[in-house]
Amino acid sequence: AITEPDFGSDSAAVSTTAKLDGDEYVINGEKIYVTAGSRATHIVVWATLDKSKGRAAIKSFIVPREHPGVTVERLEHKLGIKAS
Image 1 (tube, rainbow, N blue to C red):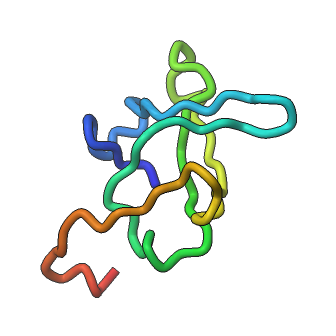
Image 2 (cartoon, rainbow, N blue to C red):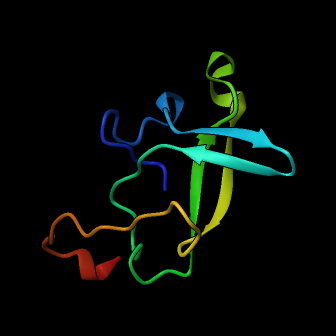
């Protein structure tokens, strides 16, 4: 999941953050248009470790959909989405 409400799919503008807390990362942010998000067991989330470093600090994380703090909501139905 890379698309966010405020910037679309511009990967350099990712506002979701990931901060190391002990041996785990805490991810804060919001994603939209996650294909099969309601059926997936895990979601790949892109987040920045440091906004000042631009694209170099953007990393991907595999997040269990049932992990505490993860919320999946169906926002709308789209024509032709069954093809993805």
